[in-house]
Image 1: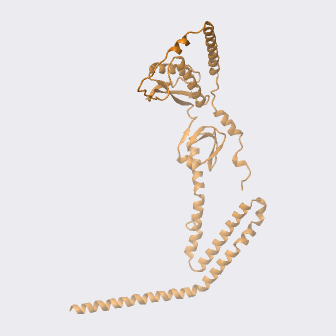
Image 2: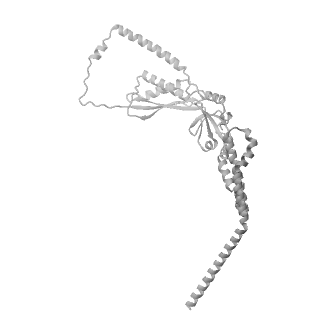
Image 3: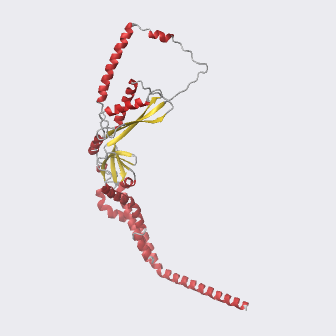
Length: 364
């Protein structure tokens, strides 16, 4: 009984295999017949494709010959000829596929889902992204023309915004073009939206001095300066304790449209040193420890002789001291009228007077 079932299964499998073989043979025969039927069309398409490849260069030169007077650049002419040649070759490829019976594939090449669509998509992706970013920047307005901004580590005055890029003029007078897509996706710091800007610097005083007195003196200097704002008020804080100094952090506010934070910081640091020296507030450098195991022999003879001064020398010292006080008063008067003006207006003026890079001759 079991042998009969096995024989029946074998016979059915053999019959199925025979049917599949016959089906494959029939399909292969039909495909061969279709290939033979399409062979003249395929040959004609291949011939046309070769002809378009050979004629692409001459056709491109013939098509572009009426426009040669528009430019004298060999580079532009070469690029234009290659573009037209590529179009002619793609046309020949389309005819070959069409005659070979691959109509859908031929349509895909010409349509946006084909090779041409991919090329155009990659070519115009950045252009479209920058254009859309310029529209979004125009709507949101994170800055205006003439503002001082910091974008992607570049600081300068906004000169203009185009569909592709934003042009900055930095404080060295250079033109910087930043793509709008990078600006929209990056960090924008507008330095003139709020005209008040805070500056700071550090100064170290010795441990043998009164830190509170130094803070009060520094605050008094800041509040008395005409270019330092009192609202917000300046601050002098103990920042950290160094190896040899108590480090003070001085914060001050200025009107950035009228005062330069760099110039103001320079003036205040110089005045702070003079103020601390006049009140015997030491400003030592880093601690250096030197050990003398045998001790140090101190000789006082030279110092005793130095203390015995002639009356003429004492009178000369008095005259020198008076002249020093007069010079210090003149110096203080000059420092009161020092130039701490902002450079923003100067850069804006340069931005308006500078030549627009895009108005120059074509680099090609």
